[in-house]
Structures are given as structure tokens and as C-alpha cells.
Length: 180
Image (cartoon, one colour):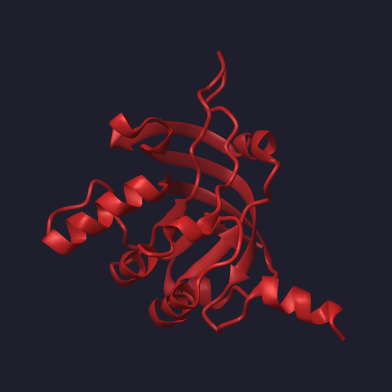
């Protein structure tokens, strides 16, 4: 299935845990340090350096680009480090997240409540994923180095739906299917 950003609730309603998806459009990068800053701004009622409505955040700290390349390796980082901040971002309009690994109960409940979606990119495929990134620029917090927020233009970024708005969890469903 192919989707384009920004995402709408209608887009997300058509996605189910286990779906293979190719994302095209603009996405943003952010890891835990950037998430902490975004949530602090929200709590202070201040303007964010990136729009959240309908957006997708990729949990990645991309490697520097080699000559002639847009970006270096760009593999997903473990998502649970963003869990303390994710419900607040979903409540404020974030629609999608890309990472790897499971999410907390609070995040899964927020995904259902605020109609978001959690995708996983394949760990260990960072160089392959980088081929889907057509443009990259730092848009906030350059002092964080690889954890700065980047705006990425992507074409057919391959991901899988892990948590959908219906409460499904591909990781849990996969384990159950082998326990029968």
C-alpha cells in the first residue's frame, strides 16, 4: 500500500497491523532529546519548530552523508525511549511514528484515542532505507548533532504497520500465532 504525508485520520483508518506500506512525502526525524524539548514547548504553550498536524516522525539519528549522497545510513532507533513524550505529541496532532520495537500500553492507548499509527522500519537496513530519502535538511536543534530534527523528503520509504487505531499490535499477534 502506498500513502503520502501529511496523514489524515481517513488514511490511518485504512491501515491495519501487518500491512506493508510505502511512505512518500515529508517526514521529520526526532529522538529522545528533541522529543523532550518539543513536549516542554507544548507545556509552556510556545510555538513548535515543526508542524505536528498530520505529520510523521521517524526515530532516527542519520549518519553524515558521504560525498554525492543526500544522507548517510538512516536506520530506526528503539522506540520505547520516546514513549514518555509520545502521547502528548499525538494529542497535539502527530499522526505517525516510525521506529523499531514495541510501545508502552500508554502509547498504544494514545494511538487509538488520537487516531495515530505506529510503523516499524526494518532494523539493519539503514543503507537501504537511506535510498528512499531524496532530500534532507536540519530544521531545528542543530546543537543536538545527529539528534537534531531533520525534514526528510522520502519516496517509497518501506515500513510495516505495528500498532493501528483498532488496538492491534503486530508484535503481540505474531507471538500468539506461534503459541498455538
